[in-house]
Image (cartoon, rainbow, N blue to C red; front, top):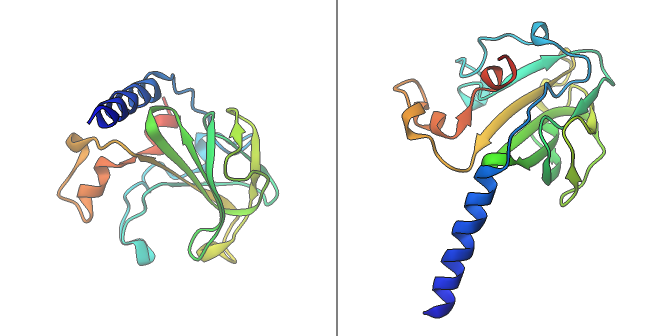
Length: 170
């Protein structure tokens, strides 16, 4: 029983620390501006097999560096069927920052990266093959925000997916 209490205390401390870390966020494509993505595509539907678009696509020239939007720890780098070459980064506030369709990536799981550090380059991998090079950028909160739920298609998932446009365009 004592071990469980210690575990709970440590868990609460870790959760609190993660929430207190300030979140400095930048556009994850080197040289990009708010003109390089469509501001209305977050939660746009219909969007292929996923139903709704749970992020934004930031366009640019192939080989353009993709940078970490926040500082954090890489929790995954590899290939997925739809996302192609992807990187997932755990950042402040217990949020996963997901970068998909990369031409390549230069980080591995477990790496610590700083905000603006190059993690890969723009590409068209996965289900973006043959399309204009871009990075699909999503922010997934591990802690739910129930007040963000809507009655839209898959609207219950909006308590976990934050709108990157609102975070980048302030």
